[in-house]
Image 1 (cartoon, helix red, strand yellow):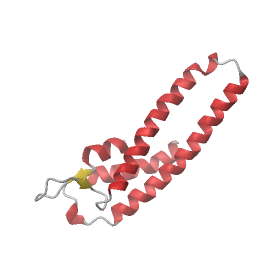
Image 2 (image 1 turned 90 degrees about the vertical axis):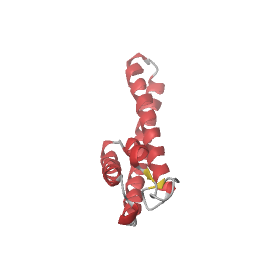
Image 3 (image 1 turned 30 degrees about the horizontal axis):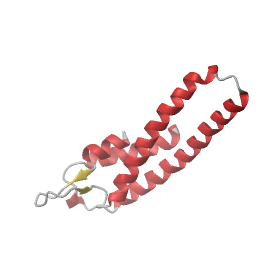
Image 4 (image 1 turned 90 degrees about the horizontal axis):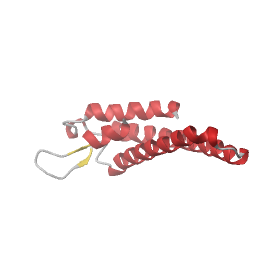
Length: 122
């Protein structure tokens, strides 16, 4: 959801200029960070889902242990990265001028909200 909110309406332009800028205080890193961790989280979910599907077929207990530890470690890391993303997006949104936001304020708030929810879901 964070990825789609930022790609869909996270970039805007001024009526007098065709150049796009990030809605979060004109900070391109804020949009890139949210999009990056959103895409990587989606790909990791697909990977770990496939691991869970084939998990009963893995007979080696050492391999099973490493897969579970990798899943746990990745989830811990991604929880931390979502927390950083929530803080970063919230900070940049707080510094955004109201006159710079013509369209996309709801998407920005949704990205912040779902980055907060992602902390607990990871």
